[in-house]
Image (cartoon, rainbow, N blue to C red; front, top):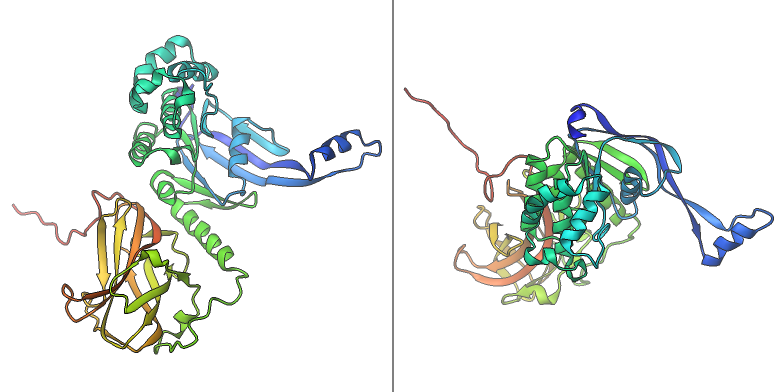
Length: 431
């Protein structure tokens, strides 16, 4: 079937699509409404999705992002035919393979192999076709002897491995994945993404995820859903920016006055604005060092917005609420950035960057530092905030380290070969 579809063909077309649910306060209200002789209503109408216009062509990799309750899963259920639309029109052409939730379509009493044959039959494949693909399916899933054991003994990661492997080897025209890969280990996720990008380039892919790095890496286009409606449809990086701005706006809307600083605080010149930040307190368990000067709270922003997603060239601004128990003549301020394996990838500090050490009076102060995010491999990174005392970058007193107190998700806008990219300054040719 896949070969008969042209590259430019529209496989999914939604026009003014909507899904309405009836919400009842109590189960008995459903019966009351069904039997009421006067036709009275005992429910409230709720539109999980409304006025959605969408076209997805063959070979597109469409990411669908949005907060919980925005309508992402409802849209996928409509496309897969799990539920029927309440309004509008929906046209879907081609064979669909969907991984909407773990264990769906799997009989827990059957072995993994038996479930592969069961799912193959559901997808219209013959026993011989599934048998031909079975070695490749089991090799990709890599769950060993568990393939011949009952699925009720599987972990969530094993379910994801076997189900995804079966889906991709059934040669669908449309592949739909709804967060299911999030339970797998990072190496299996990377293998799945490589397969989808390299081996399934001509397959239409719908990806629902909260992992913005995956969106940037895999998607060719992204849709942002808000309250059941399409709020943005366009390039993935622009969609991520729209999504994070929306999160940031809602997070701080109506919060009222921020937490006040210590009543004995004396703001340092030029940083009064940082005192008014939305401070995030630092847990005592995360602090180490001499602690005569401590980081009590922090506020991190990227390009003036939230710090959930970050990319090369973004401006990172960190405000620190610092409590000094005595005057300090030579304060050094720094940040160490580590990956999810705990390895420090890079760091910056005021002394190494050519800034003079800072003189600090006793009391609470706000200190603000800024740096540019480098071009590092996509993934999760953690910021450790540090204060030192001295005039030597390598030989000074560590006053306070606030370990891994900020998490960011870095996305890449181009291929990164290794951990980070460095510019090639010169390229010449000589005869």
